[in-house]
Length: 349
Image 1 (tube, rainbow, N blue to C red):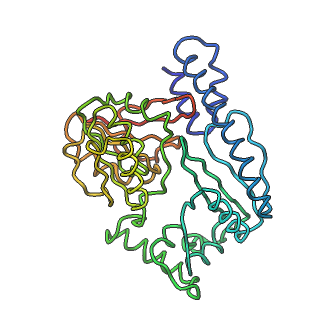
Image 2: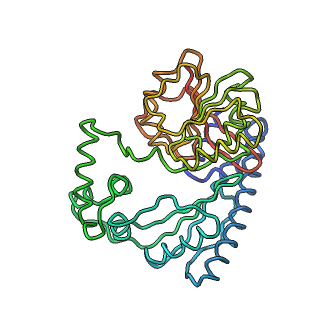
Image 3: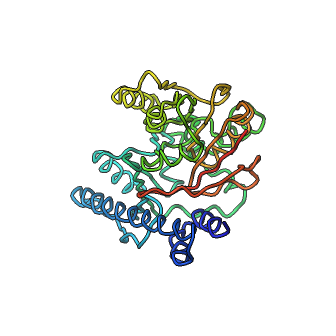
């Protein structure tokens, strides 16, 4: 058991493959888990290498200069990082990759875009498949402000999402930041109200292991908050569950509806376009939340309050849950498939 806990902690620190190598010869369940982790990391690394070759070919043909070191052995995330000269080059690279089938993590226009180009240091594009491929375009951002006040006033993604200012007013985003923080502090708006987080799909190979973990069986009602393209809803419905998904992005919500319709299981699945915050979950047996960990922390108290006795809530993520999270999960488990791995946190009512 101790060895399994060590592996979980090493997932959070990003070097689980190194720990797995140390456990392959110890025998018993830890060795079995360690071998499964190594196989998954080998598959992830192969996929990153394939994505890297494809991405570099697209950018080279378009004449966009980037720098990318080959993937090292045994990666645990489907993430590729490219170094570019500046924000302008990153935006050019993003346009090329969008044409190649990737989607931007966030889109800014007007003053928000100008402020982003001045203050940020990274653009991210993603492509959903069996697992989501993430490509980060990084450049040397402007030096961090020296004073504490200047650091606090530096705009972030939450500020650009709050309001779209005209380009000429892009320097006003520090004021937007102050007003946003005050509004959140006094309860006039949810923290980072514009989004529950970006869409990152759960790898297909992890869907059934996660459903097995919480004993999802025919007749259960499974709710997926931030259901994205509906892949978990489909997997749950194929087990005979009633599946309900909440998705704020109307494009993704429609994609989810089309997915379950094409699979012939639309009668067991409901996709709701909108925000799941404040929605009663009295009928839910299992609730999945695959969102950034800070978002999970914000949603957790309300979600647990609305769950009926016997219900289970699952959040899975390679990142560590935020410090001070309350209540802590009742269980945490390594979940490994042939092509992916994660840590699942389970709360039981």
